[in-house]
Image (cartoon, rainbow, N blue to C red; front, top):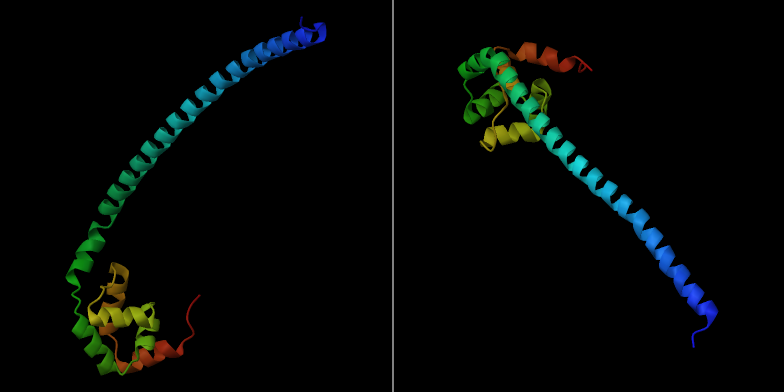
Length: 145
């Protein structure tokens, strides 16, 4: 015959489990709802970021159409850049300082491994119009910060 104490202990455990299960059930439902809300918010954020990117892209296209026309008229040739640098007697480092890029970038442009961006292309075009004296003066000036 079971002991009264062990029967009481079993009954207390059963009731405690029942109470805990009831409390945890509410927490599980709340947790599932929170996860669902978070997922919906993430989807909304993604949609808004995509819409913002599309809007920015349209604004850039509308605003830079004039800059595109100007940049489209500037021609670039890797051989032309190399010959211009040699004609002016500049090292790649000096040429990079004038254009605002590194010497390695100048080497990559001359090798045809990469092309200058629009802003850099404008600087290359401006450099074409400069003579040796103007370039020497520009190199003598401390860089603007």
